[in-house]
Image (cartoon, rainbow, N blue to C red; front, side, top):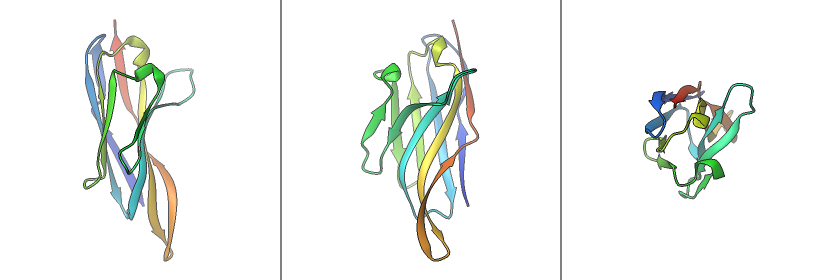
Length: 123
């Protein structure tokens, strides 16, 4: 019903930058919050950054000042600019969207996840 497709992961040296992008498509009425989460091997998935429909943003303390989340409401996309990357940023990064969809003539709000994109930072 709704698909999220991520792009932009890869391998980078410490101190480098990457930009992740996520595009939502499908039977979307509107999107509330969009954001990025990450999961490193052996660890739980954690919030990286989110942005609400009113453009307010929220960041994990570990990425504040280094990562910037941005959103294009007209295109249903969200991006994450990651600067000053460190080896501890290595993880699979997932896009998540809180989407309002039509279900049997009723509006419902569901969470959708992308398939994940690998970010590897080497020292």
